[in-house]
Length: 81
Image 1 (cartoon, rainbow, N blue to C red):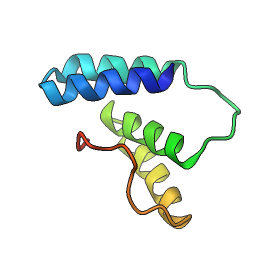
Image 2: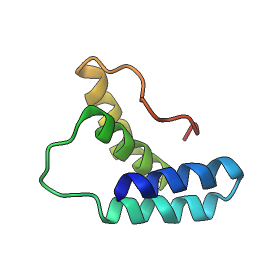
Image 3: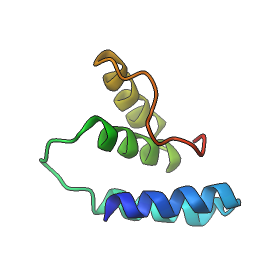
């Protein structure tokens, strides 16, 4: 479900509806499972949503963590947040 919110937000962002994109990403972050191990792809998605809603520090921290593990580019950040 959180990734569905991300997809909706990404589509809205690309269509130019920034406010609704942020609303979708916030909804996705609100239902993100707590205390569960994430795959790198899930981490990247969460980081993108965090950056999209304005929490650039947290999103950039996740990006740095992935880069330290050898992941150089997000698998899904095609909207350029």
